[in-house]
Image (cartoon, rainbow, N blue to C red):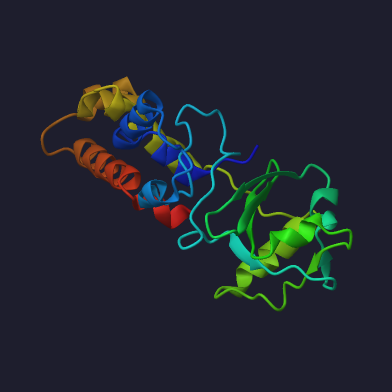
Length: 223
């Protein structure tokens, strides 16, 4: 399963976690687009979810969302999406009647916004032209074509990403700056270099500030 760094950050946001818990207690609609939109989501997702398969990002901020108009002709058939080995899908219907279909595998994902999903119920096979629906960034189309031909780009966490998530976890546990530094740099290094004007303390403060920015909407640039 691919790793969605933006979701890994948001699911650690205490305000989001508290809001999710409140929704569950009051039995509010998790599919409320308006409320979830402030987080960049199309609907609320359980922050305790083990993966991001049910995470749908709002099209206005997502770099992995492409508009699709179905027809009887095209350079891709709708059925060809599910024919790619290992590709799975999730879908939700938006209030305006648009269907948002998420296709994903262990490497990455894409969201397809289908303006006329009623064609999927017809007996005639549905197709679409990517070339007629170019988004602002042509690289999205190239990436989706690679995905559909079994050559997806891989979403993976680098060492710095993992480090930032560890810092966020430490902050949520109430760890001190020194304790967080020990998690990142090791107890021996902290013992030797922990002083008010040390390079280690400065780096720790910098990383903590970066982690705080990530969980407070900074994650949106990774969507």
